[in-house]
Length: 72
Image 1 (cartoon, helix red, strand yellow):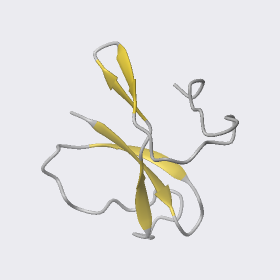
Image 2: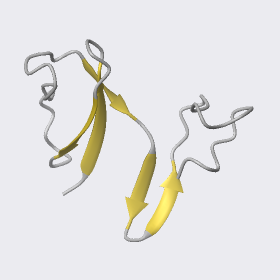
Image 3: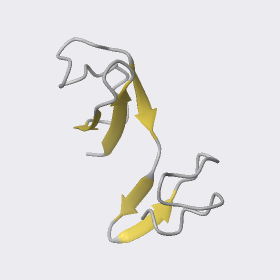
C-alpha cells in the first residue's frame, strides 16, 4: 500500500498516511486531532529500492539555487 506525506496548514505538522490509491478521503491531522486543512507534500518516491525525485519546482531549505540533488 502506498504512503503519502501531508502537511497540516493549521500547525505545519508533516505526517505520513498509508492508504490505497483509490482512497480519496482527506486525512485528519494527527497533531491537531481535528484539522482537515492539509495539503499533499510531493517529494521522493521509493520504488522497490530505487529513488525517484519528484520536483515541485521549488527548492527545499537544504538546496541552493533550486537543485534538490541532496534531498533524496
